[in-house]
Length: 348
Image (tube, rainbow, N blue to C red):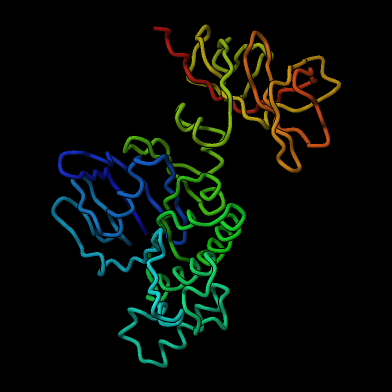
């Protein structure tokens, strides 16, 4: 449904997106994440038809819509957009906002479409209300319904949950994913919040400095990050110094870790091993001890930062009924299934 081949976007002489490639099949949801200024919103605007591309091609359903020599107008792309600020009309009712732009339909058809969409987004019976009478989450649902009204083949969402509190963001992301799956609509969302991306997306692209650092499933990004930036940006993690014993195993202060598949690293190489909080299990019976440096209560779990070996640090996510004080030594049991190792930078 959507294919980007070597896309570059520039403002005057400054290139903000460089050589980006990815694909989405019909009905798949993709998400672009990254820090501010990484180029993700510029890329979304190029897909929508709001920005020209300096290099590469964008195809929708097999048709070329953007290239240095082709620029199909945004209104002809059959693309719906949900903006960060919702861009709703305060002087119109909810129903009038949703039907705005459905000029080709009769009044009866517009009314039927509005009723259908209100039911779909969980706002049945609210068609006569004005925007200021709605909560932020309800306004977001109106914006979604309006974008879906023309039956787009692709939906773009630009930081759609940024103005909402954390709990509402998570629940709304799950609801919108269910709606898009029900309709079979392909979508691309931009966010700086990886939790939103995990809740919404089939595929996630991590962007930094205008480059797509990695495009993969949430599992791949978390367990098989392509580089240090992705490892640091996605999830929590610590880097533990180690040395490769062979392409299958690494020696660290916590012991030797092996995996069945060979890495691309050779014996003797100095590396940093990525260790996630769920790789370190709390085990009172373990002879391996670690010193508690800090702790953060997370409801059902407690996140401990621990000192191991010669001053190295790892994190441990333990059940919160285990209460341990700062400076206390606790038993830990490492279970690291995926060896994600990066060559250690040369000092100086």
